[in-house]
Image (cartoon, rainbow, N blue to C red; front, side, top):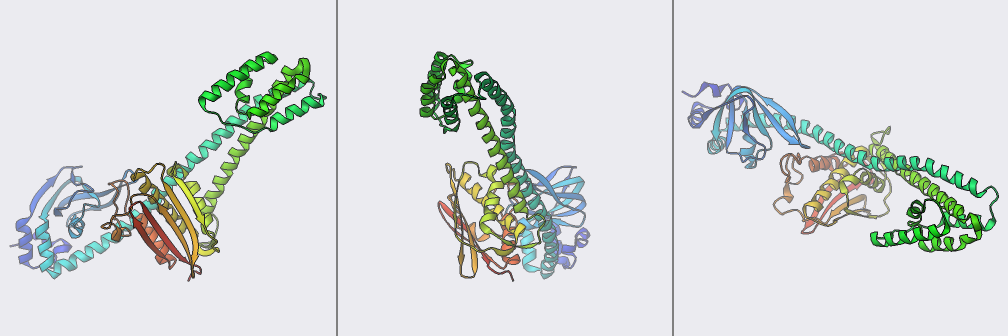
Length: 458
């Protein structure tokens, strides 16, 4: 007489008694305490499990967090996907409260599927339902994880220019006060024309960057010269002048003798003018960078625009690079943009594609240990299609991995580092949403992801 507990499970409901006897005879009952792990993500699959009592939580690592995919209860089967695909577990299972499962060996599970049409029909229904459920949840999670990554990078990119602007604004007030004081002392309301010309020339001089040793020597020399002239705070003034073109500074110090007894104050006024201009330029550059980043965010998200827009592919790639600057770090980015007319597209969805592909390219470069590594972006037109290529100089994609890169849930990254949905989502956006194509050209030391999009959206 077969174990009647099996008969209540949808997967086995239509099996005959002989098949159920085979499963029951080979199964081992296993009891789990609350929180006990049945199997972990990434484990090899040797058994399927039939839940007899209690519940199991199915969890997957995503973006360094555990994501609850589902709760499986009495009369359900878990762990069957790993056996069917002969692949590591794509998620883990943990007891929610006390639970009892029947452990079915892989060879028995395979044998039943090979000989029982009823088992195949039952399993197909179970798998279809679960696949849709799991994919929907992980797709949403993948998009949220991508948004979190971009947000973290954006915060980092905004912090640097914001901090620079704040420092410049604080320094600007003090420098402006010093400039006003020195000009008042010098009588700059009506200075000698030759003194005004020298001060203006120094304020307009270019900058320079010196190595640490050369900078130290130059600063000491400037302090000595400033002390001879008789300026106040020679060390502070030298610290500013050391970053100014040496020829311009030397010419200024040689000629400022025309100021007579006021030459010390003239030097101080010139340095203060230089500080004010430099700080103003720092603030201008910093706020310009903030404006560029905010503009890139707005463009990336296609804020306030219709679902389908005329998009500039090169601009989209540039916007994505701005938001991913923190992730790219010191990787060299080469742009080889051709002339491509704006094309109709679901803009915000296409930006997901570029984000996924550039992110994968950056990972490939770093995993290959390239220093600093290179990513090349190309755009062009081929017949009635626009073409975007994203190439990296990583290690290339192995031959056994290449056929599966667009499969749902397939990833070569360790558990918790990827859901295996990034390229699957990209494929759906390009192929199904836009009627385009994605292909991969890879060899050791080079991988090119090529996206072809129709110039007119059907």
